[in-house]
Amino acid sequence: MGTVLPAWHTLNTSAVYGVQSIIGLLRETSTYHETKLLGVCGAIEALHRGLDPGNRTYRQRCEALAAIPSSAAVARIIPDIAKWADYVVKARNSLAHGDEPKDRSVPEDVWFALHGPTLALLVLVLMAELGISESAQIRAVTHGAFRAAANIGTALLN
Image (cartoon, rainbow, N blue to C red):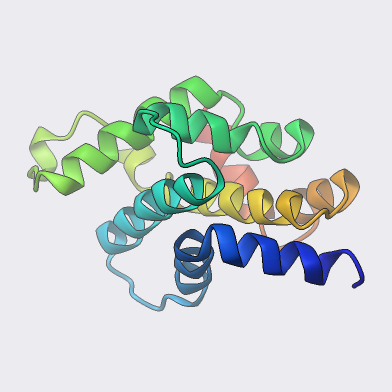
């Protein structure tokens, strides 16, 4: 606790909107998938802007966040970061512009699979920023709460 609490204070001070977005997403009860997907896309930007306020594209922010946690844990939920980032960017743009489902450039099975692995990645980022060990991050995706996200990510984001 001696290292987690100061790290939590630092994280919540620098990236408060991203942290609060992720907490809200974890507590979200909406069953409307697009609401959840838009929320996770917004959390990506809010968290990364808090951690690195530099001028980056949305895709660069996605890739930079994926580089923060344990690479072994990330590989279990998102095996191909470039492909995942491409899908997330396209999904965010479709949602932001109000595209009809027939006009989306993300395959439907991927569309409905993006939320879980992306939220799991964001939690892994928080874990890494809090100084939680690589082995604990890996356990979270192999035996813990994000095992289902890992299964989805491996199946559809390869």
